[in-house]
Length: 105
Image 1 (spheres, rainbow, N blue to C red):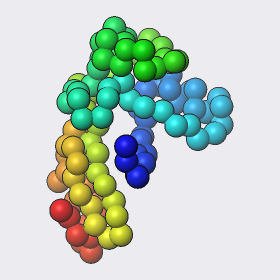
Image 2 (cartoon, rainbow, N blue to C red; image 1 turned 120 degrees about the horizontal axis):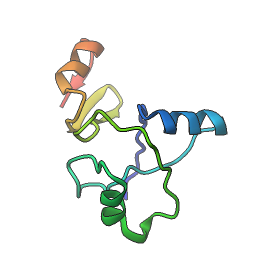
Image 3 (cartoon, rainbow, N blue to C red; image 1 turned 180 degrees about the vertical axis):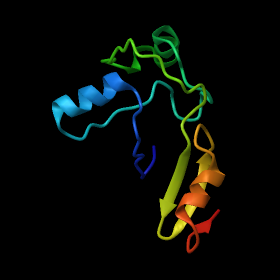
Image 4 (cartoon, rainbow, N blue to C red; image 1 turned 135 degrees about the vertical axis):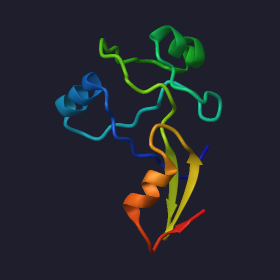
């Protein structure tokens, strides 16, 4: 229930191939309900257990993820960046790359 969107950079090779194949933006969810799981749900069984019947389709992959933490989530509004959840990309790294002229909350 938010008035915002998230844009992800997908590392999984199977997902990247799928996105390339359909050649169109897609709207998806991660395998966790917002605010309820702090770590990535590594296995299909963990994802099914967590999401239950809320998911109609699941893209299966044989590729293992190297990440064991949640995605980093930031909120960008006007010229402000707010850290919502620090994950595999550290907030300090984001600040270093974006530089000055931005208000960090």
